[in-house]
Length: 265
Ligand SMILES: [Zn+2]
Image (cartoon, rainbow, N blue to C red; front, side, top):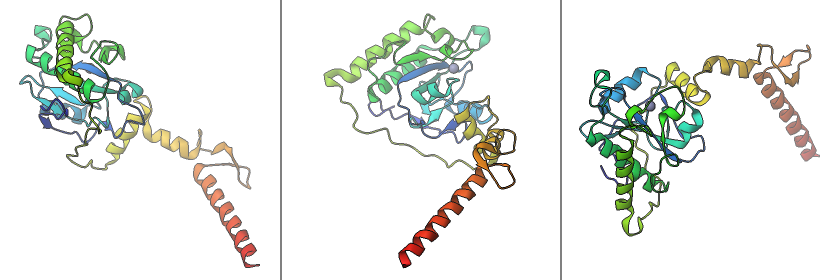
């Protein structure tokens, strides 16, 4: 792990269930998660093939850190579009299951905290401080995630202490601020299937929308009979989006023709 450049140990970029870009939003804070599972980096990649979810980083039990979504893209981890666009999601692997009440190892706590500190430095978010540039998944949505790591939980203080200590270490002597945005790594091109398209739109609109229905509605009007505000055709029917563009094109052609005739005179 290159802490100064926030270069992960490994890239394992997912090809779906995230949104390219950040919708014009800036990175403002880190959101903490735990797996509620004992996952490796590759394990996360596999889980997110089927589940419409993702996070930027996974810290696995070996201490290795993997990047699954580029920092410049929006991962689906915080149950809210704006939060997703403004944050970086860090997943922490558990070292035991439900029967052990989801423990997290010291190694994972330490690596997760250091990653957050490095990101705070890299994106000029300031010294790690809970509620400011460090937040928990459970603040949004109905979840207990990151469980024992959440503010007030048994791992919270150790995690925060290490994040602050490591931030101070990284920034000692002025802490040079990086001049450029972190370079984007591309592992594989997404396959442009109908499912990818639907997932992409779901990322923008939120899961409560049926993406295809929404597009259909935009094109045809709320009840399929055009949009009142676009005006009507000669038969008194409201125009659809396509009708309106066609009408505009016809207007432009008429104006062009007029100007042309004027020019010839
Ligand atoms: Zn979570």
